[in-house]
Image (cartoon, rainbow, N blue to C red; front, side, top):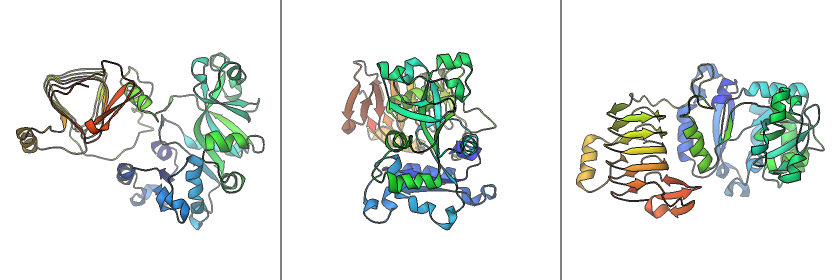
Length: 396
């Protein structure tokens, strides 16, 4: 959303999947274009699968292409008559990009579809869907996560896209970022008539269109991270604590917009904080915080050790009297209790973690579902679930 705003794009539909109530609330608070004169006729609208008429409205989106197809009628009304191109973005990527440069390149080239692409070196290439291009940047073919000889066959001359000769030798592959711009008429021809049952752009529609339509690669040679898994979300958050970070939020010309929370500065008493980020409105007392991200309204009590952890914070404060009452009844207040040790963990919002708890996954378990006990483990990362309670003395 911030990339759209910074690029001057102010007509945005957001296609949400299930469990989207908190996302919808955030969108309404943070990106209310209608009340701001500087956005003119702009809008941000969240569209859920169940809002569509007929039988299709009873089904969840089956993929990116299916989601757009279900709302094709929005692009046929008077509000959309002047739209020439449609920009399709993913909601689980972290990067900073000027989309108007991308769209301008698409229009100047005369391409039917333009794909934002990332130059990749040998070590990471087999993790991505790769593209083969000609000497003008036209996409000829695709290969999904190739290995061995299939991988070598996907090598291209990335100087064609603007890389220097030295950099092109280090990064001889180009990967799709899952960021596309389509001519509007081409997009809905593909979705409704050519591939009416295809569910995904990246793995189905675009590869099948390469021979018939002009698909062009656009170079994006900057930080980009897919944070669609627990492990990648965890690592991308902790990477923000590096010096300097690979992705920086501190860009005055292209800020990252979010909802205003009007929180006071954090209060920190007798703590040791190393390579960490502490968000607004938090209370930290005599604790060690190392290589961690601490979210808004967090409470971290006496003698807590927090290492390699992403703590998302809380949606609200508990008053001192509410905290005292909870403790008197043997319950756990929101936050982290005294003498608790936590490593390699994501703590979701409003979690209540008691005193003398140890969360460190010492047996290096990779996958576990213990949702009845308030946590799960994904790719070795322990996740304390939203609104869950971890009782005093628990060891995970």
